[in-house]
Figure 1: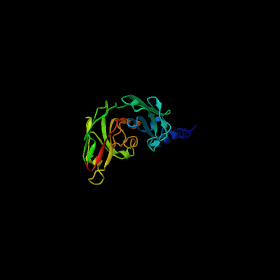
Figure 2 (figure 1 turned 90 degrees about the vertical axis):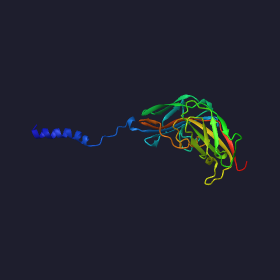
Figure 3 (figure 1 turned 60 degrees about the vertical axis):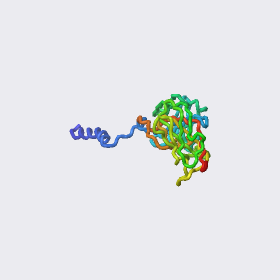
Length: 262
């Protein structure tokens, strides 16, 4: 074999390797490719005496319908809307007390690709103690003060109100309670016509939520009698898992009657 032949043979053997070095590497099709966005909540709703567990799951920004999701050993169903028009994984835990105060496991298994387990602690039961004015009659535009017993392990509270006929429709007023003191005040605006300084008369329900974690305001909108006041930051940031997981207790409601004359 001549020197020229040896050189040509060497180049032929090296050419595939050289081309591979210059080209972009192919994307490996393994579990490290995927990114998951999870929105999950467990709600003990004492006004309906229901425990609700709901999860939405995206894989690479596409809804994932083939995962197996378990909460406290129960497998969540997918694709049967219950309290929301969107497809989701959900389970009913009847009665509400079955969730309250427990620490439970939320397990998400995406076949052979990826899985994760989230520890979900649910706040303990609590009750509304006082409403001011104590006769529950609100004349004109007045503030309403509310106190309640503390809920064990709660990260915070939400105080809300809504006209009775439109609870669970996305209407109403809500606010975060800025401290862990179990008391808050609903401002006159919570009972006013908008726009204008006139009261929107009628009976109002008053609700208090205790929460742990980071409830997604859009995702929980139709699971709660009044939507959350605002979005909260993600509390799941464990690559490839991102999103919001939370638990909530909705205490037994109270009421006030807004009137124009005493």
